[in-house]
Structure formats: structure tokens, C-alpha cells
Length: 166
Image (cartoon, rainbow, N blue to C red; front, side, top):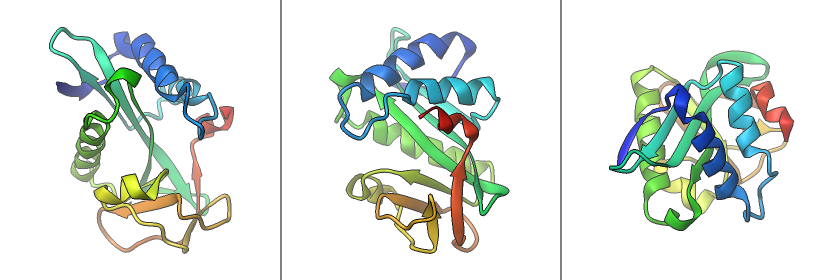
């Protein structure tokens, strides 16, 4: 497996994998592929990585995009969605995409990353829920952050408007 930056010709494969990855997920809004497409169209994919097989087939994708805290843009990013082809899930591909993406955020001097997801899964990467950092004005154990440098922020996080397709 190789992890590399998304290329323009990857867009259709990324949409197909994202739709398939979330098709049976109970927590899915069904709009994950549209969110990635809207982020791409807006130029808001800060990091967009694909997992590729030896033959060049794409079977995984992860997106990171800027977030605002209390309406202020900074050096914080949102992770998601992360997608792996259904027949290849639970084999460490998503974990590899997350680790690679977080490492790239570090090299870009990001202050941190947030996500909405399962604490049992994302805790292994260092994500924690902090009641001082909210989403939708409410603290939630599913809304988590990872400080990469500096102090933990306080405030309400908002994602790029591309997420409003949900």
C-alpha cells in the first residue's frame, strides 16, 4: 500500500469509495462523498490523501479541512471523512491514513485537529473530548480534539460550509 496526495484524476474513485464506505454506516448522513466534492470545489482540502494498491487502484481516502473556533480561523483542522473500501475495512488502512495525515499536519505547523467520531477508535491517536471545545454549542464525548502544538483551545468549532450539504 502506498499513501499519496490526491490527484485530479482521483476524484471519481474517491467519491465512489466514500459513498461505499458509508453506505451501511448507522451514523452516516449519506452526504460524505458530496462533502469531499464540495471541499475540493471550494479549494478547502488542506490535506487529501489516498491509499493506493500496487496496481494503482484507490481503496482509501482521508480529508482534512480548516475549521473555525468561535468564528475565528486559525491553525486548526477537521479530520473527515475517512473512507476505506468496505471489503478492506478493519485492516489498518484507515489508521495508516490518519497517522500519515496527522504527520502532515505537524509538518504544516498546525496547532491541532478535531473530529466527530468514536472515542474508543480515535483515542488511540491521542484524540480526547474536552468540554471546553464544543461543536454545535454542546460538549460531546464524540467530538474530540488533538493538540499538536500550543494550548488546547476553548470555544465552539465550526466546519467549512461544505459540510452543510449534510
